Image 1 (tube, rainbow, N blue to C red):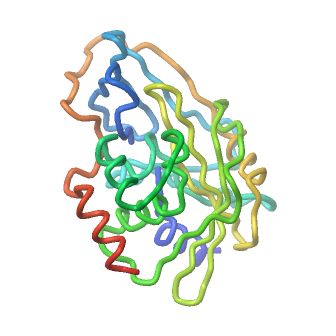
Image 2: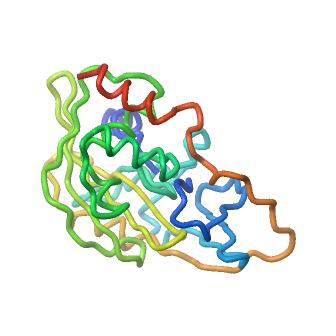
Length: 244
């Protein structure tokens, strides 16, 4: 169990801050709490907080990647470990994400399709590590499927990551509603094959609490918070193909 937890932290240290602009009306505010997101939408302050309503699920904050690391020791079925964060993979601005899609030959109907594409997930895993993970190969096991996650409508798919002769199965999920978006990857503790429906154990354990920020409103940054500015689209694309 401890080994799998470490594997999740290393191999699926995926995921999960506010990323790219959903549209020009979203101006994200400075916030150091990975379980909360605040923004100005057409000059109106908005906020959302993730709330865990199932005591079996615990999380710790991964401050460096602005993500939440989840675990459920008592979950005998379905997923039991994973990471979650605001935004959508690959957590660059929209313009850079589109450049990556073009160079990788990805045709996506919308931001959710792009975020859950195997190559984007593979790229995000590399970005989280900060260096090339030689031999890591992430592939889709299922097509995209609709799912309710944290009370919001989203899409999910099962993926498999192969590295050094070993394989890890997990379910990737993404939600995109205007200025609000989420991305996460979760896996079972016994590394068995999973389905998108297995994500329901964590999807039902989390809810979103919406509020209006009051008092001192932080000054919006020129770009949304929690992006990886040191990685340009060209650098990410080059790193991906250096490994292949």
